[in-house]
Amino acid sequence: MSRVRVGPLGPDERAALADLLGLARLPGEYATVSIPLLDGVLRDAVGDGVHGVVTRLVGPVADRAAERRRAAAERDGLWDWFERHPVVARQPALAEWAAGVRRGGLVGGSVTRTRDELDRVLRVLAELPAPGLPQPVFADRVLGDPHGLDEPGRCAGLVLRALAASFDLPPPLDAEARRELWERVGIAPDELSSTVLAAGFRLPGDGLVPTILRAAADAGQAAVLTLGQLRAATGWAGAPADVWIVENPAVLALALREFDRGCPPLVCVSGWPSAAGIRFLRTLAAGGATLHYHGDFDGDGLRIAANVIARTGARPWRMSSADYLAAVAGGPPVGRVTPVPWDADLAGHLLRVGTTVPEERVAPALLAELSG
Image (tube, rainbow, N blue to C red; front, side, top):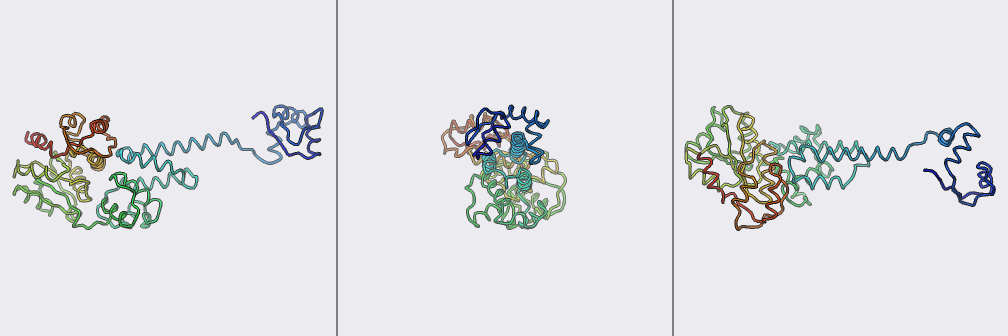
């Protein structure tokens, strides 16, 4: 700043300003003062410039421009950390949610408060789906506060909006919609209604889950495992080297018809995976199994695939652009499509072609690979 406008000035103030600056005539009610000129006059008169004199009279003078630059850098750093966080980056469907959170701005204008709150939200999302815990128990385990996800509350609200984005649902507007979202991710679901289908598993041991799985495999049937049964199991040794995951029960039924008692290890998540499904897959992965996932080629199918891959470490199985383009034909529209992390071009192909490839259509190719 090289000039400053001052005023309104009374007669005495106008005379004082003219004397100070050595003006030939009195300034008007409003005057524009040259800062370099004033700085020189003050140095000649009192041995100090404008900044020093003002500091002595009114106290330290902040560098507002530097403060604004610093605040902008802190805000940019916060949002960069948030949008690049692994929880967000692993699920592209959350990108729009993250952008909306950013548009909402800082909590109370504070970068520190905002980061603390977003860290809590991301910690919750990283632990979902939960293993069938009541909400206060889950909140205490993850946040150290049994009331950390109470409603209404900003943390719970942001988590629910993120879940709605993941499932491609509108934000929940009533208690029933919020309850359904929590139950989808294993917060206090009924331990009997949360299930997963499995076939072809012959795990060693005499625990309940290995026994059920072996009996079903020996009969050429699928087993239905409940969340309660899986929670009672502490893990098992001898997991298969490879486990194949499908989205639709019809594909599992075709595999059993094809392979009978020789069916390879198959898991069906039946659409969006339940808490039981995620728990079973994570336990298999922890036991050394490599998980391979296939699902529908449509908007929801890609989001389900991204969700399973992010939460279990599964690998995409015949889910590339080439697989889609080789199988596409007439079919229903693909719906809303979001990017996928394993193939940068896949979402674009679905949007361009606009046609769904249901998993059942490519089942013969999947079974042929399993046969080999």
